[in-house]
Image 1 (tube, rainbow, N blue to C red):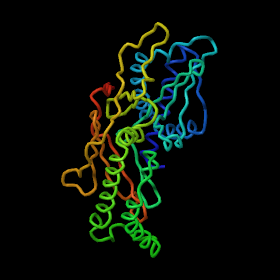
Image 2: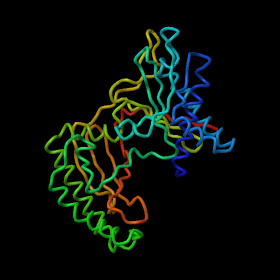
Image 3: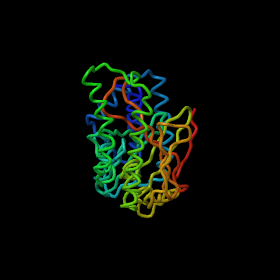
Length: 319
């Protein structure tokens, strides 16, 4: 596993354990010791004690905040109303659910989830290739034949290079940005604009839901001596009261975009497109090759550049 993955899984485990320790004196709570739990525990156990403490202190700070805005974490309706804590499998992310840590009360038909990030803010890593219909996969609307006709020659060339010699490096392609990146990005840009013209509301909304996640969630970003908590309350399922117990702060609902405004290249860049939508959403798509050897697919590093001003964000400083 790459070190970023190990760090991420260790942080997920720290959140789960810290929430369990803090909640067990207040309410009935149990942990699902599934496969993701075992993997995350191994990652956490691979760190020394002071590093584990750092993970747990950060997790604890986020718990102290969430307990104030999610009264259902601590309130049950009867003795069998047990709060279940669970780590999600990586497969969930492929269907558009980005939550890593789940907290559920089946008696209340209620759950919330956390997307745990360790020192990074990327929202998604998606691929492009001539076998991937990104329109179908991301938006539920198929890409056109024109799009595939434009990208096929480039991916075919990459396939040929690979089949001639598996160890061919990307650096061996002269003017790679002009020959590979730019034509692929141009075709992607044209196709996304076309899809958006033909299905304006659907494309804008589905794009954000695909990238951000189709379930409401809290994003907990562990930084250096601080933790940032963002609330993606797209469907209004976060921050619910429990009977007469109201949350101590109000989390506004986030508005999804209804139209795509423009797609432009980032200044002085041949690798990054900026997609602007209404309601204050802007997303960057940076294309890159995932490995040093040539392969007939490319990866996007996708980041949220700006979100609606209604995105609830809280910074907590930790020692």
